[in-house]
Length: 304
Image (cartoon, rainbow, N blue to C red):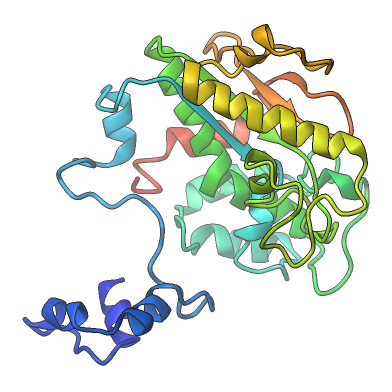
């Protein structure tokens, strides 16, 4: 990754002075080099890096041994995270899916685990993500098994790790609140669904859609704006009181949302944040077989 960054500057890789060279690169050029988003160039990665300080060992070991900051957390992910992390939208067959399981940027797996994952993530539209498509497969340029593959890729990059985090904090007796965001804002194609980062406008109560090409709340029903107020208030409440429910005890909120349950390992419940149905607690057990496979193999297979 370091050499990849050097390749996008005038600095020379494998040089003893390469770091000193990077320090002299003009800010605008360095910014462009770091923020390259074209897939072949985007080699920086965002996964944790062992620095022998804050991250002293693989994160699965560190979490399992209790070596993390024991403070309350609020942690969640979006329903269709995988549509942002699928390495190829043109996955048409089981063989093609298997190939990507064995050779994926965020963690290639052995043939043995790949075989188990094929069974845990079947080509079954009734359990695949992008649920807003119902029983339909998207047309070109999306492949026939697109929804199958994005189910796995969203779990391996985000959702399984979110569940493992919730389990770890809760098992340590630390107040833990988890969620699944399930709303498609304006401007997002149905094939992309509730993808990565679409919750941000709701969290920051950005009702005017400042900074968006298509304002997220444009032509959407009042329930969308109500959800944004509910989410942003819950986030502020958590930051202030370590409890996303506390604001509702003093503020005259007329919504019908359930109280946000504290995560429990024996009875895991997350908060489903939705604008098409009333937000409510749901069992955090969806895709259990596949997610358990990922969590169990975090160290041995995914080296994390």
